[in-house]
Image (tube, rainbow, N blue to C red; front, top):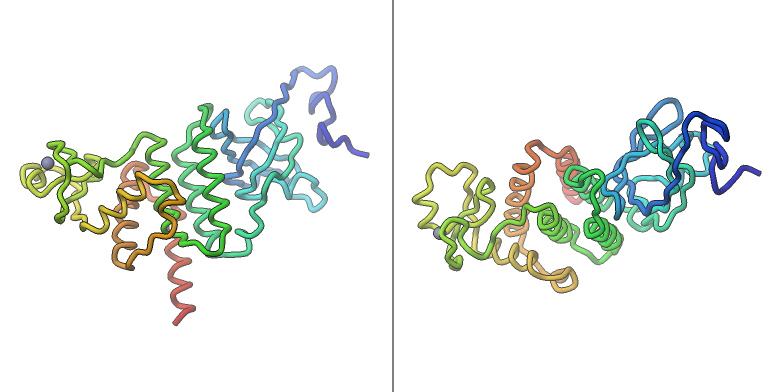
Length: 281
Ligand SMILES: [Zn+2]
């Protein structure tokens, strides 16, 4: 029987008992953010881990139908992995599923949101940095996404604001980013470049700021509510289509500005929505 604990290379790793390289084994809790084909039967995994942040590892032979590890390292799976330090990438020697979010996988629309969220984490997470809060946020968001009675757009916006907090780009929504005065319930402006709300007076005196867009009273209310409450307190929020779209566009432009490039999965999400809309007609 193959060795379950140490994988196909056995307990001494791929270089054997007297190999030139001593492999160090370590265990991680991980969520699979991305997987790309590598070599003939391997996959390169991008993982998010609580202690080591983003981590890339090779899962050898997992594209073979006989692979025992394959099912445990699918996209978005929460898994427990044993890794061996490698030259370029660390190598998965053992994999077990903690949660495969099976209810999420059956819903193509929700999978689209999971792709988007996974890609955001991949772009913002850092390698080798403790990321427990981000890991917990991703885990709870995937769990929520699997729930049938849920507004996934609202969850995506909530996730975006939390993510922005964690990576140091929290937008300022309560006081004017220029003068610091509390923002009044009138139509204000939002500057992606300055990172928050500008009142109408300050917008006037700062014509040099690019990327300034108007923000309605209701959209600002929703953003503040999402930014300052837990998910359980915001999940039943009902939004009009106009506010939903305004909040989405504003956060998207802010995120894209900080990523300095467009997110592939945003297009994917738009495509999915267009298809869902066409199907309803
Ligand atoms: Zn001001």
